Image (cartoon, rainbow, N blue to C red; front, side, top):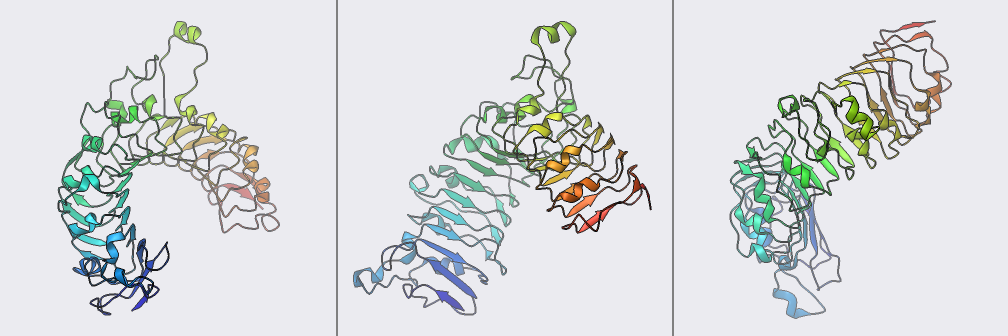
Length: 434
């Protein structure tokens, strides 16, 4: 066992067979305030966490002996016990939530089980960030959690909680981050558009058995990260007309316009049954009176990360993707996109572009050479017709280039001279010569 406590904490009562390593981190001078505990490589089992919170840990201050009987953890502000190599197990003791100065509690990635019990004085708690993801917690979520008036982040991804209604989070007015992934019994409801508070900045609903887009997203004006991946969303069964944010009638099968928020920086819609990014039905008179219509997806001027892989998306890839200067990650593979690859003249920050397993054709846009940060380019399993793109060899960070199962032709040049960082080159099933 190894303790790093600057001699301020009495560890009597915590056995060496229970703890491999703990570091208690102080942000203030000795004898004033225990600010945080961060443990790594520990082997906590059963009620060891409860032991840490009891009076066996005392502050000893040579400067002020009167502090010698103060419970060290009563002033604890930040606790990080997440994803240890040897994981925490057993239930969470409700006394952990009653620490009066606690602001951050991270117990994610452990093997904690059972229900979270109710705890007193939740409304006066200072807790701002609560992370319980990837455990085995079950039962109903404690009502006390919905009384945490200062809570800004709540991550309970990948547990086994009972059914939960999304409108319960209306009580958490200061909430900014909400992760509820793998909650298969999450109840969204059919009329939750009025859920305007809290105003979320990050929402993750991965693997929640959703069959349509939650309408409360309409009112989320500050949303920067949205993850709806691995659901069963199929908008083709939705009402074909009547998008609240558009006067244009929308064809069935399209993603609703209100999903495409200007504030979005990361959007994950992968592994659903979506058939179109956006489509409109305009008669000639309406089109002429309104003028050129910008596709809603083109509103994403701050987008950095977009994944719509493993859907049924068809039509052409929106050309405006190539104009988003912040775009770094674009994954559209395993769809039915057709036509040519758009020009990427302005999206020069791209690191990953995956367009494999579509129906794309034509030549590669030479503007891809302007994406100097390219690390991964996968264009396999299309019908692209071009010579070997030796001009990509000047991209010094390119490590993966996949061109397999297309119609590329001619000699392969300059691979040894250029492509200095390349680790993977897959050109199988083409018409190369020489």
